[in-house]
Amino acid sequence: MSKGKETIETGWNLDNSYADLPESFFTSLNPTPVRSPKLIILNHSLATSLGLNVQKLQSEDSVAVFAGNQIPEGASPLAQAYAGHQFEHFTMLGDGRALLLGEQVTPEGERVDIQLKGSGRTPYSRGGDGRAGLGPMLREYIISEAMHALGIPTNRSLAVVTTGESVIRETDQPGAILTRVATSHLRVGTFQYAAKWGTVEELQVLADYTLQRHFPNVVDDDNRYLSLLQEVIKRQAALIAKWQLVGFVHGVMNTDNMTISGETIDYGPCAFMDVYDPATVFSSIDMQGRYAYGNQPPIAGWNLARFAETLLPLLHDDQEQAIKLAQDEISDFAKLYHSHWLAGMRAKLGIFNEEAEDETIIEDLLSMMQKYRADYTNTFVALTFDKSEDTVLFDTEEFTKWHEQWQARLGRQEESKVSSRDLMQNSNPALIPRNHRVEAALEAAVNQGDYSVMERLLDVLSSPYAHSPAQAEYATPPEPSSRPYRTYCGT
Image (cartoon, rainbow, N blue to C red):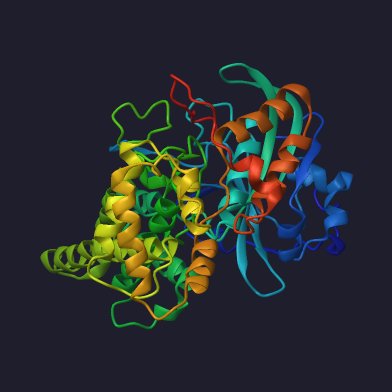
């Protein structure tokens, strides 16, 4: 495999701090070359923010990098080892079809992982082929970029290339590789791996690395490992609240899919809720609804408890005292989450200050939405622009009474109705990546080689709070169906 055709003109500025961890945390290896790579989509704005030259990234040499056929200067490819609770069952895992090329240091001095997903088999593949299909890779591109536009912490997508080879999943489809960008790929599962199969010294090295990379502000705290736990809890509480506020269902909240940085990661069987229902499940394998929309906050708390368990040897020399410290912090998660969610819901209803009855107003609205099967996103948009007649709630007595209470609540705050509308407009997206729109884009791309449908979708999703006329057709819910929408773990 060739190495070194990429020049400084492309803008690669790669470092490899993760490779300085003990060797048990990773396996160094190169991607498996592919037959005939072709660039399908490149994220121009993200590339520019990373300090990369957009024009150079479209060259044959750069496409070869995105495909794993060439290694850019400064890269040291490796597959990360981690473990995880998958539907409560603990198992050894790792990057089975992904490789970390290195960490791009941006012009602003930020450090982000550059990872190839679908780049071939690794020692952690567990019988898999190490490859990925075009549909799932484009799906992750669409959803992750939509999440970023919505203001939700997330890994991002830099590029997708096809490989010139087929992969077999439910059907044959074109093979593809996604270049993923993340603040890091450190997971709860990374710490579970260290706690289960590493030494306490290795666990401490991992924790210190994590602190230096993500939480340097608490490195000098008296108990920096307790501070690490606190910081991760804070970020996850804020993240899950943001998911709930836009109706996002991750679908597979295993501990290996929870990042230490507080970013959303691993867009497998995820989707956005149309009709409001806390029991909404999209994943085809989540038969019991463990990862349903309404269960996401408690599942996040459960995952964080598993993270706290890994830190016990570092929290205190006395195990009982360590457990007490961990339990005290974990007990705060629900309160932190609820505070973020309640503040977000107030904003969605144009409420600036706090009153005791706010939660009742919010819960009454959600109860009505569930009862009458109201569209989650469009209901809040209708309230924003005083178009209640556009909702299925409009003609009901419950809504009339609720609307009067809500208007009275708005009247008790100092801010004007115009200010409330502005707050609502900035808190309620005009549109989400509707499942039927995403599927239409993927169908055109994968089966017809037509990427224009996806490009138009990405364009309107890039400004979800613009509320522009061009977005109107993309805000339309799907036609009623007797079959629930299902997604699959294809990514």
